Image (cartoon, rainbow, N blue to C red):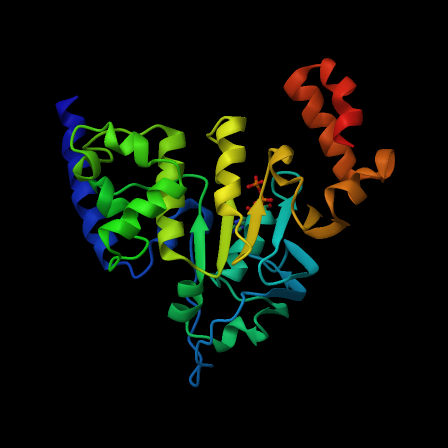
Length: 306
Ligand code: ATP
């Protein structure tokens, strides 16, 4: 065991140094593996934060030119609306989010925020506008307060507290030995998957971006906790793009895009997609999920869902 600690500590220390130097921690998160350099424009369009309308206009993209990953993806997320991306594993959902965060440039088409092509913005400004709540949150070996404040290092204590309350982690934090000063992470208090997700949500709420990207962000919570949190996350004052595997979490989305093999094969509200019944990919996904979750009994509930 002691042999293991050496390299772990080494990694921990270096990791921390790297972290401190990152302008934006989203870079490190699992959602955005292997970022490629993208260049700032020589004459960037100044940041003019409006509502956060997101437009994908015929976007095609491949990590490797021999294998297209997204083909002609188009959608418009009105400012303040919620768009959900669903579809089989590997269909390209996370890639959509990575492109919006501009870890890669599109090969065809364009992505616009409030009418501005994201290639015309400074990276720093773009990422300032977008908050990401990833699948797996990396916590720093530091206090819980530091971890929440990472969303906005100049926030006041009151703001940190308010964000934690909205993320429904404040009461839990008060039970920790040193409350907000409790050290967390590998070398401190270990948080559960659900607690980590709440910290990530608090961090993002504190950042208060006009666009939020959620990648299965509440998957570690039970259904009731998840529903409660969604309410505080889905504010009309920002645009939300959410990747969901648990379909029950996105029934209220303004628009659901079903991505399959890199193409958008269906789009609409939950109700309109369910009306497609046996001909629909979304409908099939619901049937499958109900069967998996509840056995055959779930089928009986089908009517109430549709
Ligand atoms: P999941 O639901 O499993 O997270 P997804 O729909 O989000 O999947 P993506 O992560 O967008 O899918 O991946 C789409 C395709 O692109 C997959 O075939 C994947 O193997 C490939 N891919 C993803 N990241 C890279 C990368 N960095 N380099 C090369 N191929 C990649």
